[in-house]
Length: 135
View 1: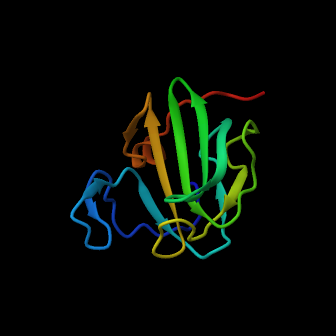
View 2: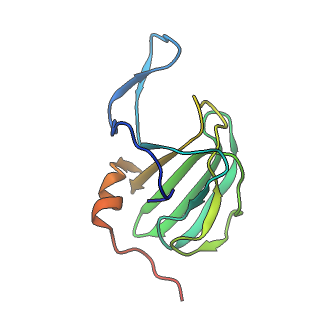
């Protein structure tokens, strides 16, 4: 789990969401893990940081490439503790829980994709996937 002791109230990966009574919707592509602002967010596995920056919708965002087309995405963080092109190991602190971007309160939005297709991140947390190893 990228946030120790986090609270997951509902696993709603793939469910339709409407924002502010908008007539348009989108599919939720991740898992929302609630926690207190400032709690450490850890890399789910070894990899290279592709992006560590503020984006309008997702706030302070980190994307890690793990190899074999697998990427993990971390949204809404308060602080970023890594930069693009950094190498991280599983458990390294990459940021802190926050509520930046389009967010309704302190939490980490955690997503995973393989070759550009989002997958249910619970699969990675429950089963584990062998990823790129760092020496």
